[in-house]
Amino acid sequence: MQQAKILVVDDDAVARELLAEALKKEGYDVEAFSNGADAIERGKQQRVDLVLTDIRMGTVDGLTVLREFKRFSPDTSIVLLTAFGSLEGAIEAIKQGAYDYLAKPFKKEEIKLVVQRSLDHCRLVRENARFREELKTKDEWSPLVGSSPAMLEVYKLVARVSESKSTVLLQGESGTGKELIARAIHANGPRRDKPFVPVNCGALPDTLLESEMFGYEKGAFTGAIGTKTGLFEAANGGTLFLDEIGELGPALQVKLLRVMQDQEVRRVGGTGSVKVDVRIIAATNRDLEQLVKDGKFRDDLYYRLNVVRITLPSLAERKEDIPMLAHHFLQKCAAGSPGMVRGLLPETMALLKQYRWPGNVRELENAIERAVSLSHGPLLTPDDLPEAIRHSAAANGESKAGKTEDSEVCLTLEEVEKRHLIRVLRETKGNKVKAAKILGIDRRTLYRMAERFGLDLGDDAEGTEKE
Image (cartoon, rainbow, N blue to C red; front, side, top):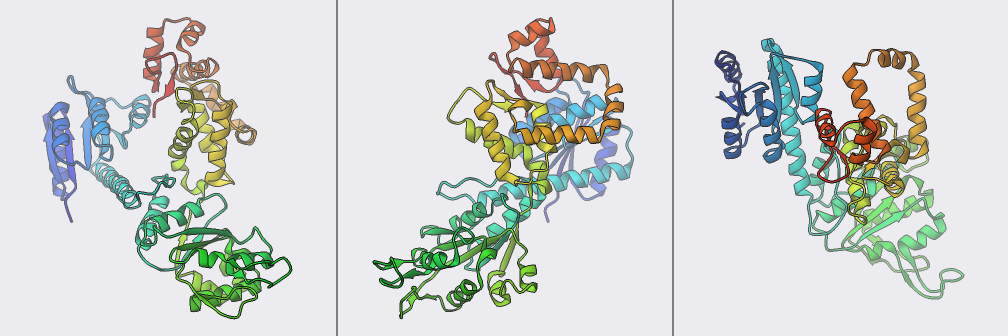
């Protein structure tokens, strides 16, 4: 296995060499630098897994090293070190993309643990990118969004199962993206040039669904004035996606099992069979195992469907993906109106991350679409969000009234200043001229304040949250 590449950057020679030597003893490939400029140059020449850098150094300090690596090597983990630790410094470091922030002096076991976690994070980010690259096709289908460990496992399974012919069972709550995953499997497999046919098994009564899936012959029933090809035949050579498979009635379960076993379909009212070559991908938000125990779903059909099972996490189980998803949907919704909505206020993002999302990713997409439609400025405000999200936050705040009251009393002056600045930007829809006037300062001071608090106001008259 290839050694992890680590750069140690510190203008304190003793601290630099001690740390580098300790990491070399752990088996890492370590290089030490006395200044940030040389470390940045090395990063441009060779792939680096982790950079441990002091913050206060000459002209090219640790934050500059952080920003430069995030620009040309965003998957490299950065840990900032300082002898002048503070909560403000830690928040600023994490906000700018550092994986962690350590105050000197640190214990040997502490730095070993942070290094291992940082390298694990780097590996996860790179695996995520690699598996998503494997899922790219020439077809235009909505990309999978998310870099959480839970979604990484989904990407791995999709990448591995796409090339096979195995039947796949997708399980997950409504709105988690089961059809999107099914389309990804189809689009990245050998059947990509053949049809992908989706069927909602819960949308029609069994009698109609049977004729839709298997087709019918002329005269098979009243109104059958001609022969109709079923969806199995329409999907021949490709993929049939059976959504809400748990809603199938007993009679259709028997017929589906027979088709899967024999690879033949018999149209309603017909006497002969038609050979089909169809890959089945089924999806459900119900517990099929429990349905089998309850006698509501055939066990033999369940085993036929459950060859490869992929369980999609709920949005509550992957909350770290909410910012990425929110920005993805914002860009998608705002594509038709360039120059308008460009970002979200920190308060807005905080509400999105706090909400439970019972409707999962689909609900988040709808919420962002609504907010973009209602917004009159470059930044989405809490008032642009659906009422349910705002009320949920209010209810949560009331349930924690005691804690909230204590924390408000203990706010630092700087935190009060930051909150007031954000509130003014929200009220003015990001207009710097109006915001500066309300605050009683000039625009240059406004820029300095925004930069201190991690807000990028841009070069025009509108501000946007720094991502």
